[in-house]
Amino acid sequence: MAVHDLYGDHKSDWHLVLDVLSWIFWSNSTILLNKWIINSTNFHYPIILTCWHLIFATIVTQVLARTTRLLEGRKNIPMDARMYCRTIIPIGLLYCGTLVCSNVVYLYLNISFIQMLKAAGPVVTLITSWSWKVAKPSIGALINILIITLSVAMAVSGEIRFSWLGFGLQFASLVFDANRLVMVQILLSDSAQKMDPLVSLYYFAPACAVMTSLVASQTEYASFVWSSIAQTGWTVLTLSAVMGFMLNVSIFLLIGKTSGLAMTLISIPKNILLIAISVLLWHTPISSLQILGYTIALLSLLFYSVGWNTIKAYIDTMRVWSGKSEENEVLLADRV
Image 1 (tube, rainbow, N blue to C red):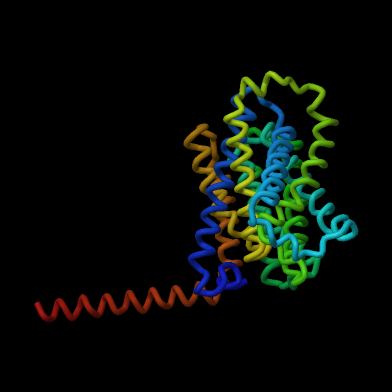
Image 2 (tube, rainbow, N blue to C red):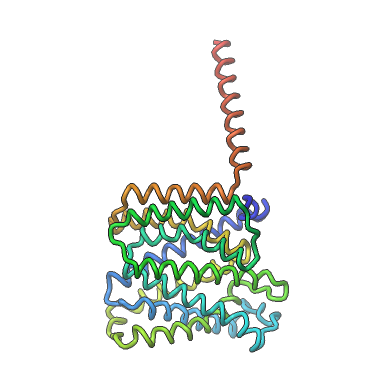
């Protein structure tokens, strides 16, 4: 995969950079706030919190559709019951599974370790892309997959507070999310289904809200205490929902411009930033083995996304530049 495959042509580079930075900001902000809500307040209900985010997104998109022209694009999409059941509901199920697993896992693993496990996301997404035939298998990609998998395994072996349940939840989240990203990529690439981010959320949010509500009713609702809402505060919960809404918009925006695999590749530097913030805020312990494993995974992903030819070109350019600098120094010395 070349650089332009991830970032498009030069004319749209800056727009895409801003979109990536926006996604990084909303993603990390949402994760950190949700982590604080679940672990530091009386609101210990990650699935209900996810359900609240989706209900909020459903209400906002429905209101915007009826009061503004921001969702006029939905009128150009031939969405009927058959198409909704064939495209939106399966993606909604996968999205629900991703959100539920990714929120519940915070009860069992710390943020830094979760982000390290997410380093395997591109591996899962690439294999999923192969199975859906939206990417062609290659030996080079396979070698990179093996290196990334082994380096992530190294990071896992260095975890002090390991939980098999937490590990299973995070792996399930990766599988759900990989299939969701590829299905959304296929849907948005269909010329007859040109959905902008708000229109995508307009269709996906209600289905995801209903499915997440069903999961919450069978898991957390029985132990839910309504007073925890007041104790946590409507302001905090609303802020969390707004951040989740903006995150969903930025996700659909990026998938439409790149691909599911590109999304997971771009997530690596985002996860590194989140790990650093986690260490600063919660003093999360990280072993040298974890750092080594994650560094190898990052370098492997960088090599895969950029390619050896590009890296070699940069090295040759630096050598030429260095050679010219030495020549200039010699000339200056002769003149003196």
